Image (cartoon, rainbow, N blue to C red; front, side, top):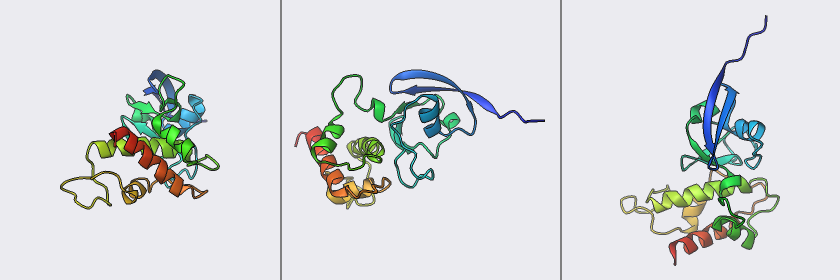
Length: 179
């Protein structure tokens, strides 16, 4: 006698589009994106939350989609790399800066790096300090290279394009702040 896997209905908004899925409760958010919605931008790297290649934005916060069950994200609003730029043909400012600074080599980690950078810049705009913030009471005072490196430390690049990634994020942050 075979046991029927436990399944649940899962409603998600992905890149502004609603989805109704019937998933095995053990399905990760990453597998739901890749295998059930054919959104393969988020990459399966380590499958243990260590490399950040699967980073997406869930309700505006960056998450490692390999560590979250899709049923736990039910009702959430998700942005993957496919939706970062919105509906138009124009790149997101971070994507443009990554291209200008050659901030990718093999490109495998790039979708996770971009989603993480977008979430990180929003955290800075909201005044969230990081471990590199010198004055925790005053909050971050701009984005130093040390701040960027610390805030992006959960995303690994096996090609070691870090200097280019930092400069791309710094330029995008500078352009966004009008400095």
